[in-house]
Length: 204
Image (cartoon, rainbow, N blue to C red; front, side):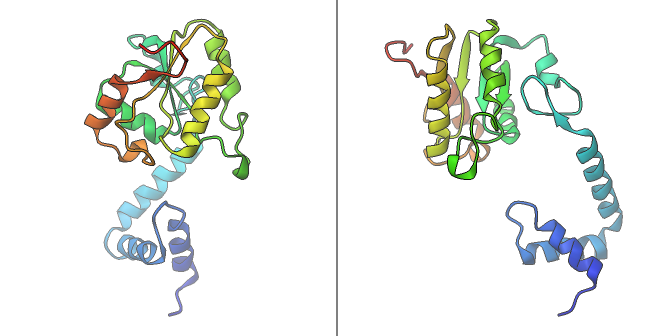
């Protein structure tokens, strides 16, 4: 079937979303055009505003409209404990548990030499500088329990082996091979409660 150029462009654009294939993109496009044109206008406006105004927190690398995000600016949070995560969606998952009151550092990925993702791409120089500043007493490595996530956690621990900060890893109540955004809140809270040290002889 031959589609109009604009309709085809809309369908193709929707396919950039994760998990959206040709059929799903087509259904979304037709729904917006046939049943919810105002919703389409609102969506386009929100996307444009988000792309233009949402950047990166200069401290934790989380998505933020301000130079420093609301979490980093919150004086009620424990600034001595920093949780290292792979993505903003993982941060949202942890925040929803309500069981963590420290700060975060978002890597926006994991070490993957094959894909050209090294320490610089993950902002690890900023993380190490944050630790060296001396305010952090515990660094919780909450990267995903995948092969890449484990490798990233061990790399960070090795690089900070000489520092005084206590380095811990969330417990494996989280399924091995899983990702934090798909873990229920109870399991995630249990994993944080059972975190362990990655340093030999320093397990609590």
